Image (cartoon, rainbow, N blue to C red; front, side):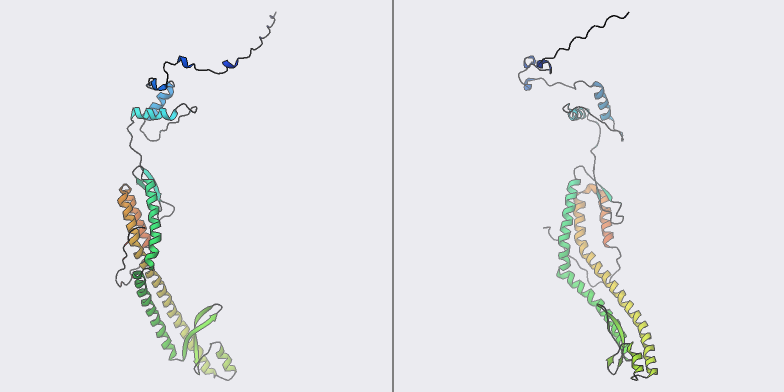
Length: 313
């Protein structure tokens, strides 16, 4: 037979003074914390401290320490004190920074610098770029560069003029002339027969035959020579296009040579200031030089252009 269940006692409410622990200042053996003795070591958490000590002492790569706890439990201070006491045998980590790879754009180059120098290197690099953006246009607008550029343009203009003059004289002996035909907004070079001192479009020759102004055998001879001269002019015109490409190449080379004085100066300053970059900085300099020299051809030289970097603004 079961015993009768005793009724539960009614819960007694707690007083306000029992809802939290209070520290009585009279129990403390000092007036201020300045009079308290500094406690050596760490308070509690012996197992966690052993794990932390083992993690700090590990020098092999690939190991990490994860620390968690309530806010205000001095997690960071505990780790800092333990590292300070143990003095683990580690070397300072180097700074790593990536720079553009001019040969392979999606594979930037990694520079290794002494600790704490990466941020200043970034600022100096930006300052160098800003300097080049200001100074390179000034070099291109300067008298030495413009004089050298003018010589190159004059040389190619003379070669193109000789080609066209030779062809013009040749067709003039056969009563033809070189002119331009308007096609929309573009004026294209065209060969015209010259009849009675006037340039006549080749399309009008057959019309003149029908009107009795020109004999058929003469018109056929004109059309035959016109086709022959058109083929010859195509060859001449291609040569002028080749000259135009060569001119653009030499002007590009001239610009690269003029800018290289400034660019090399900036790179050399960085290499001297950040010797920790070592081979990586040297490779970066060579990559930049290789980009400037891409598609170069040995030009005919009429003196060498040079421009001193000058002081930085």
